[in-house]
Amino acid sequence: MKDTAFFVRTPRRLDDLLKLHLTEQERAFAIAGVVVLGKMDYENFAGDMLADRAFLEPWAPQCERGEVWRCVLVQRRGRTDGVLVIPEDGCFVGWAAYMSE
Image (cartoon, rainbow, N blue to C red):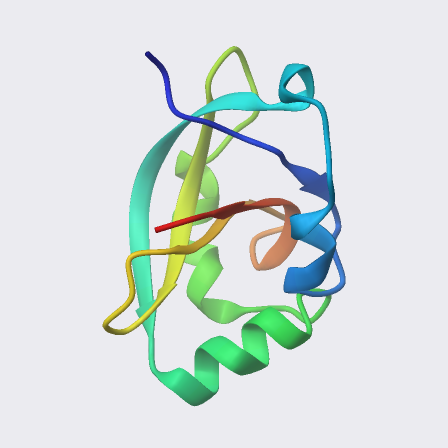
């Protein structure tokens, strides 16, 4: 069974990723890398995903949409849930999905 998630185009904040959706709208994904942030940095990221994020830039070349969407997982330190991100233009959240614990 493949891992799947519901990806949203240019979400503003974490709540945008938690919308009800059909399972047919979910995409298979693979995690290319993990970024772990402290509590304040993660809350800042989750509250404003439209801001450029320098920590995404090194992962951008490894992420892409395709049959399996390759993304970077952004997590809060000490947690197992997080946000799957496909960066665009280097450090901008182009697509994102919530990955539960």
